[in-house]
Length: 212
Image (cartoon, rainbow, N blue to C red; front, side):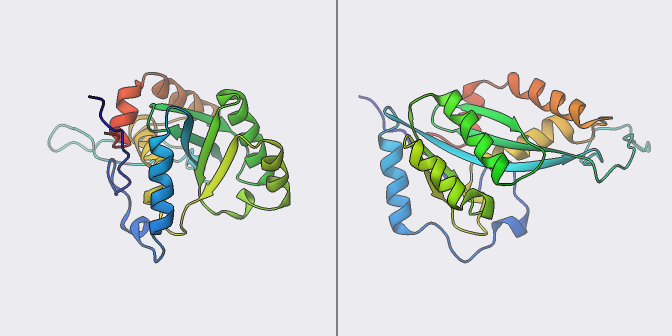
């Protein structure tokens, strides 16, 4: 007998910062039921979570194994102002994921990302869950969505990044590709991220996203 596939949206996977888990507007009962309906028709439609993130040339420090009494060091040029900005997406039920580079988060970038998503996912029905950033809305975005009816945008509740599965992917990327790592240019950061991501199997993404 086939088992129903589900998606766990509780805070899990790489831990989120406490401030990211606060908020006053969690998923409503209606929104949760809609999400479950989308999951149930996963053979006919795709469930996609997307988000933007920035990566600085100044490396993020984390725990590392070292000889007792020694002081590990990570090289840096301390260029806090230079950043790599990426749009990321994940289809947690299938274990698909991808990245799209754009100079910064704005309406032009989001529209370019939507075009890229249309190309990657072709004519498939896509339920796209994103946050309510101003550049995710507006007349230009509505015009694009009206012309591409296979993409239906669903806005996540404010101040609840833990509901966006892509956040788990970002945390894994930072842990595996940028923590305690020196990259001289933003292009080198992107190369390191994509190289690491190419080795991820669909099972790893499903486990990260708590698909059962």
